[in-house]
Image (cartoon, rainbow, N blue to C red; front, side, top):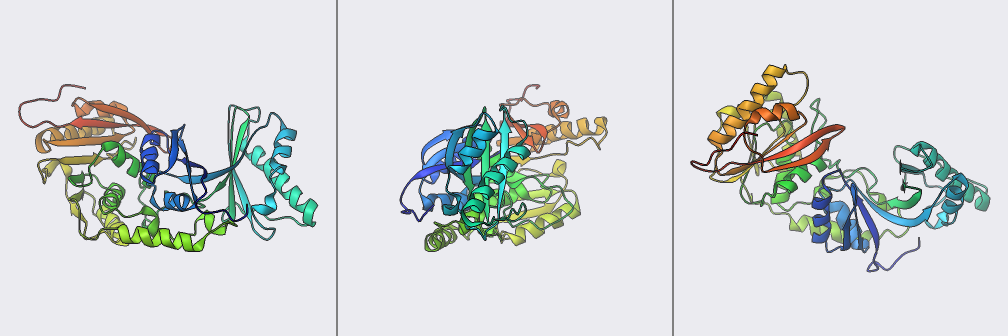
Length: 391
């Protein structure tokens, strides 16, 4: 892959979590990508090298930004091996560089993604060995070049992974024993809420602060990639344009607003959570933007006449069923009484307990938190006499 004209367009695929595809598609349109097309946990588009760099820096709901290099059909081992060898891999990376292959296989004659990645690795290694007598090494943890193989019904897309480490690892989060929400999921939920980035944003059970930080990054127009410590995958590519990436990075830094753009407030009852959230907020340089308070949500009142409440209440089995149903009933009562004029979004994996909220949902979005099937439930909290009906 020799140096390309940086204005030349090529295909780009951005991967995401199930249910966030439309949010990601809009992010790519905002970066002026062309031919944006929504798929399953992925969005394809067309853009140039600058836009590929921008997507890595700016996309809040992307997990990886891939650059497809070949599409082909492979019905058996020989076809897969032969097709992989049709790419001149010495144009993609050098012998002294390490590589790794992430394979995703579905509805194909091949059943195991590990076997497919092994076969692909053999084809690449054998090509180098035939040409040079030597072979490049595989490094699964920190490879110089990460390849992505996607196989669906025996159609294969082989791509270069421009992101390297997953984009949900923003870099602002300090390691704690708190099990936090994935940053991409948090950003996607805020995107689905339709929050305008100007009105009040409240997370009344804020945990380690992921919703608050992602909301603040949006309001302040800060690129989530600016906190990243590790290099991006594209920085090892043969067509890497350092000047271009520096320009993209500097432009992103210049676009960030320092004065607070919205009222962003987090509450939590647990002092340890407040401390963890504070550490993460300071790490992101957002302590002047986000207000934190140790408080019981059920004692709080809306700080403005309209805005958005987003919460991820506990849904684990450790709470007794009576307690969890009561918890959700209290959430519903507090929202109805103290947050009139707000739109409330409750993200939960306990669909049974959610019925105890006792308000009518105006929207239910299926999402996953890891492997747990969840729903994002929207409640429009009207002012005055209009009552929310039963669920």
